[in-house]
Structure formats: structure tokens, C-alpha cells
Length: 483
Image (cartoon, rainbow, N blue to C red; front, side, top):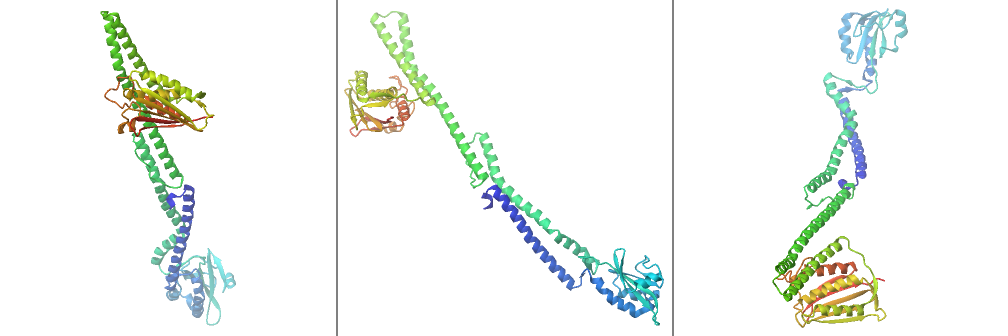
């Protein structure tokens, strides 16, 4: 299809088509004109250029037959009936060249000597051919002559009457100049077609630009062609999609920022209210030392909760904006997890939670690994703090680590009630809290597992949540090992 071809090809094809169709139409027009001409000649409506020249011998025979009698003006009427005056002019003259009568007033022969010299000859005067026929009396003496003048112009047609000329001349003039008419017509026709071909995508682009101006990015330019305009529309679609994704990212970031501020304000409300309440009680100074110490401990705990909330949010924002780089150091994974086990047992001592650690190696010589200890520690802290929070008293948490040649797989399973269907769908989302009935009691804003996921992905790994077969929630993550 012409509209889908490259613009250069469209130009070339249109140029070829214009010339081809113009030539074909011209040939057809000239053929029709030739047929009309032949028919008119057959019906004697048009005479060829030498038609009147061919009449001269016939007229000459008549003049010779009449002889000197044509010198009398009374013979004029009969002579003019024999001479086609629309194409031949004549003049009857005496032996001295003096005009007697005829359709030509201008003197042609100046004297008797010139008359005798040009008798029976054809000469030219005033752009016409002149045949001088002698007028001879009964005694054989030349007493005068008849000059027959006619034009002989190549490609000139002669018409039987003026009516035929009125319509034939414009017709053949139009046929003669028809190539120029056809070139102009087909150029206009294909230019209109070409303008329509490029007008459609250009109008679509203009409409798309208007929609973008109106902040409407929910559209698609449905123009596909392997040409410049098709690639332009495709590039416009890609630009629009990139712009849409960029704006959606900005809107999402703005919503997340607003959500973060709202969550922070909401989550800080409880510890700050607690701190304010106990600070007012201290200002009254009516309590004994034991109560004062209790108040101060409560203030300290709530300040710690507020500080942790702020740090978590700042850290999450830092991960999203900057990403951070890995700081790899050699570490003995077994010793590292054993040390972390003691810390987690202290965190769960009030609930008497038991922590179990198991490390298996595919290659025993691979005990020292290159990992980012700080980020690995944060991943485990966030997962274990979440597990301890939802593990019942006297429950257990199992940390199972497996080291292969290319990665570390760590699974943390607790003996709690496990994840709900909603938890499994949103557990790694920002600000998600599984237990909405106590969102701020333990000072977390639903960022722990979200941060863990981001840190795992920085290691080129993945993280997932599921429920164990015998109950309890499990978090499993895989970290890529770097040389």
C-alpha cells in the first residue's frame, strides 16, 4: 500500500505514476483526435494543407478554356462560382498587368514585360503562392491573365465552413496541449492523495500533543507503517509511555511521601503522647523515686520507639533514592549467625522464645564468604524482629542457612499462626502491618520486610513469604555470592 511506504519511495512512485498516466492519457487523446480528424476529412468538413493547391490545375483548365472572355466583368460571377474563395484569391488583369476585377485589390504585375515573364509560372508575393494563367483570344494572342493566390502552410487545416472551425480549433488546441493538462491534473490528484497519507498521522500526532497538554496519557497512536511517519508515531508512543511511567512514578513517590509523613505522624503520636504525659507527671514532683524511675524508663522506651520509626523511614527513603552500594567483607557465616542467635534470644527473652540456627555448606572449604555484613545483619534483624513479634510464648524460631557455590539461601520460620492470605499478598509492601488492631504498640511502621526486600534485591537475590506445612510463617531469601 502506497501510504505505508517510505516517503522517498512515495515521491518516486508518484512521479513515475504521474508521468506514466500522463503519457497514456496523451496517447489516448491524440488517438481520439486523429480519429476525429480522419472522419472530418472523410466527410469533407476539414481540408488538408495542400487542398487548395490541388484545386489550381482544375481552375487553370477552366481559365484556359474560357480564354480572353474572362476579361469582361460580366464573367465574374461564373468565375467565382468555380474558384473556392475561402482558400484562393484571384485577380483578372489585362496584358499590361492592370487589375480588372477579382478578390485581390493590390496590383500584382507591374507591366507587360513582367506579365509575359511570369505567365504559367508560380511565384510568391505577400506570403502567398501565385499561379499566373494566361488569357488567350481565338487568334492565339495573349490579352491578359488570371492570378490565382493561395497559402501553403504545413500542418494548417482548412475548414469547409466557419461553424466547424469554431468547435474544431478549440478541440484540437486542447488535444495538442493535453499533456500539460494531464501532468497538472495527475500532480494535483496524487498531491492530494499524498497530503491525505501524511495528514492522517500528522493529525493523530497533533491530537496526541493536545491530549498530553491536557494531561491525558491514556491513549495510543494506532498508526503502523514502515516509514518515517510510522517510526515517528512509534517514537511518540514510546515517549508518551515513558512520560506516563515517569509521571506515575512521580505521583507514586508523592503519594508514598505523603503516606510516609502521615504514617510517621500517626506512629509518633503514641510515643510522643506517652512521653508528654510522663514528663508532665515528673514536673508535678509528687511521686516517689521508684515511680520517677519507672516514668523515666517509659520515656526512654518511647523515645527509642520514635527514634526507630524515624530511622526506618529515613533508611527506606535512602534505599529508594540512592540505592547504596555493597561493602563486601570476608565473614564466617556460621560464627556470624551464632552471634546473632544470642542477640535474638535476648530480644525474645520476655516471651521465652527459643532460637535455633543451622548452617550447611555444599563445599566445606567455603566457610569464609564475601558479603555485606551490615546489610545482611539488617535483613536478619528486620525478619527476626517481625518473627519474634508474632511468635507466641515458649515458641521457637528456626534459622536455616544453606551455602552453595553461587549463593546463600536463608530461611526463617517461626511457630506462630502463620500468614493470612492478605499478608502473603502485601507483606513486603511499604507501611503494611499484619495486625492492624495494634499498629503502633511496638513502634514499627510496617517497613521492616519492605527494607529487607530492597536489601536482598541489592544483592541480586530474591525473597518470598509462605506458611510452613506444620504451621508458622516462613521468610526465605537468596543472596548472590560475589567473588
